[in-house]
Length: 309
Image (cartoon, rainbow, N blue to C red; front, side):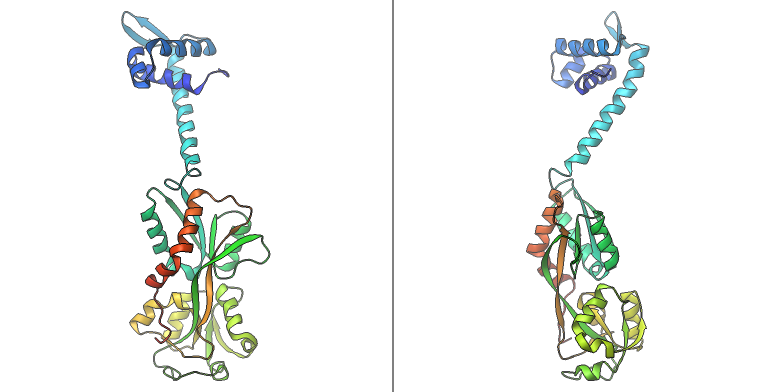
């Protein structure tokens, strides 16, 4: 059987299913002699007759019955391989693997939905990580694209900014500094701060925003969850440094307020990142192009931010 071909197996399966050489020829758009030739060659490879005929009726032999199940399994495996490979030859039907830092999950699902609506048949694999986890995914080639604020410095990656990413100081509506203008840093750092954990993208951005003043801030609580930090600030436990893209609902509801601090908002950027030597599947390249062309405008609609709020 080692010299049997997929075409011979497909012809055999059609004849065995229809129990008719003529109907199989019609279905396969072949002549009946061509079908007979393929069956004869397959029988030679098998070393056994696969069909027997009594009058005008065709029947499978025991060898043919056994080979039919095997042939169908082989044909199904080839079809599965074709389907798997099709994702690399076009956008539709492709599988998009993308990872994002936690601040992005406030808008990223809606970006994915918009992209999928433009490219029917795309399968989405979307994961959310802290910075360390996302860097591991990039290094281990577990994601095609990564969405983050600070691209890695120790990996050979392509990093392209596609949208602004403002960071602000937030407080509860009743905080004494709400409504104050141009609050000096010296005043702000005396306030108790509820902050993200060290090493997170938010913490690293905070280091940039505060510069040399970071060591002087009053850290009341360190929490590895943006949602919990927001609730702590709303409850009056302190102020916080957060991505403006994570607080749009609270600003709209009036449960958080942005403080007017000198040097803020701190304006950073969202980046789409991938390994430089990675051959992006067509669907990943299409999503990258989508972010670069439409990402900024869509994010501003999904999580609008007014620094005067």
